[in-house]
Amino acid sequence: MRLAIFDDHRLGAVVDGGLVDVTSALPWAHDPDPLTAGWWRRLCRDFPTVRDQLGRTAREGPVLPLDRVRLAAPALGPSKIIAAASNYAEHVAEMHGVQERTLGGVEAWMMSFDVFLKAPSSIVGPGADIVLPADVLAAGHEIHHESELVIVIGAGGKDISPERALDHVFGYTIGLDITVRSAADRSRRKSYDTFSPIGPWVTTPDDGVDPTDLTIDLTVNGTRRQHVNTGDMLMGVARIIAYASSVMTLLPGDLIFTGAPPGVGPITEGDDLRTTIGGLGELRTRVRRAA
Image (cartoon, rainbow, N blue to C red):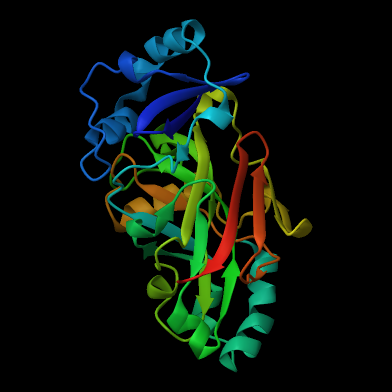
């Protein structure tokens, strides 16, 4: 099932020809305030109990064309965004050159897999602009795109085993981890407002998603910049979840960015970015300077 958040933070099931509003099928109150919308986190946690009812409503309800609705980021109030670093060997190799150019040397500790946090306030949805901060531009720092598969946590937990990790997934979506290349703290460089575009919707595992075999493509102004298969990850989805949960308790609705593929590069004002991941749709964003 493909589930979107649209218009006044309503729940839609994406079907052929558009989406169907399935908000009324939820057995709990719908709170449209994105700051307090616990209905979304509850959906992430309890999706198996409402899947059938959502499916019936999606089959029977009127279809709204996608160009008649406004899609929002498919995440409301996550407790945290976790991001994986150095998770593709070719990206690790290219970062030596990137850091030599932007930092004047290689930070060896950044070349090993690990996880870090991004601010949830950096989330924006499909069609939203990536805004280049004035202070970063004034300092002359490059700002890069990183296209990634994003995990949406369902049933959370602590010390989850790799063997059970996929049971804790609500679904998958597309994300961009926008990054300032500077000597600042990694989390700060990636947490500016608009630096975590995600969307266009969440695809649940029962839709046939195989997270070990998804093709990620990113184009900038029509030119391909990134192309990789998730099978090339150094740490696959299950191991990322297990590792992250060994550090911190995962809660329903948390997001995990699974790491940047090779081909990262700078973005500038006016750029048009289109990211696709096989079966998950297309995330389109544009780039502008801060007013």
